[in-house]
Image (cartoon, rainbow, N blue to C red; front, side, top):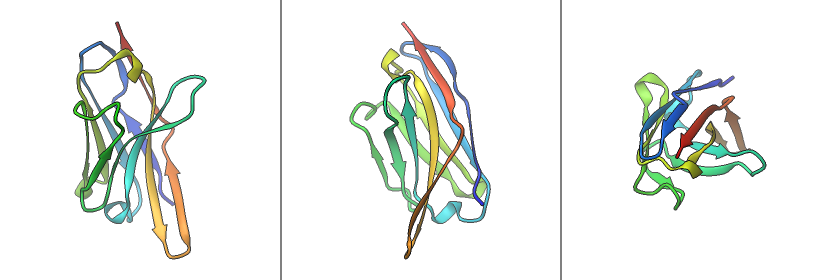
Amino acid sequence: QVQLVESGGGLVQTGGSLRLSCAASGSIFSISPMGWYRQAPGKQRDLVATISSSGSTNYADSVKGRFTISRDNAKNTLYLQMNSLKPEDTAVYYCNLQRVGVGGTYDYWGRGTQVTVSS
């Protein structure tokens, strides 16, 4: 069983920075695609960034140039460096790990960490 625990959220002013971490248990971290998603009240959960097992990354247009996703396979940890934060970045941020197999896929989720950006 895979368990994910996010940390690093908090309150920051516009233009500030935060670094989110996601600690993963289990032995499949190094071979699994991972990502960060976010959800604001009354809105759907949206993709922020993804990273493959080899380090290939993709970003939502709204965060390109400001956020950086990375992973440390030796520590089973996923990171999201968030710079130049804007009020519209305010949301609960969730860590995701996707187990891919020949029979299909399964998504694991953390409980989320709150990020609030003030004006």
